[in-house]
Image (tube, rainbow, N blue to C red; front, side, top):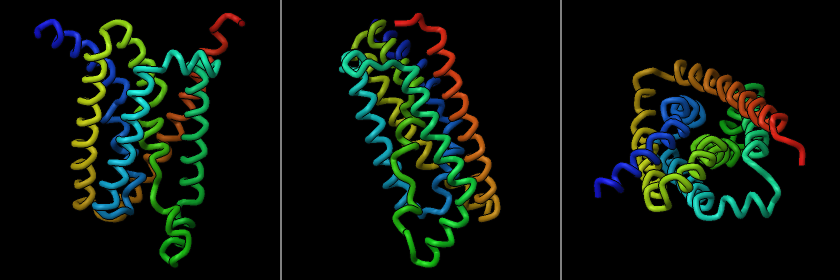
Length: 206
């Protein structure tokens, strides 16, 4: 039991750092600041479900998938960074227009964020996938799977209660948080693209 606990902790801590709950919480608040509580919770459950499914898939079949598709983590970094960059720039440039269209009764579906980018690649992204693959090889499947489950539960708890602070901040502060979060999201995406390209250039050809 003590040995399994030690393996679990060794697998849990790096994944917790890779997911970075304090770092992505403001992004989640910014993306969902216009949603009511029930809609926000529904989105969170769907995003966490998608993130958990991807994490488990990478745990049990990540190496096979990478070899079959001929890709690596650097490819995921660039692809994920491009997705985040497009989403953040679109929201920064056209967020108010989308909100006005929603208030007028048009395009209501687009007002609700999807599980991309919240579940993938913010909660489970290239860094978390890499951590899972390393932990699987170092500590085995059961401790790594348990570390994924516990980290997803932590995300659920923090994200469920974190946005409640907005009730005391007011609408102006909520809008400011949303804009700053999108700016940081753009910066994160650029960092992912840079890391992916740097990793590609560092790899030997072939």
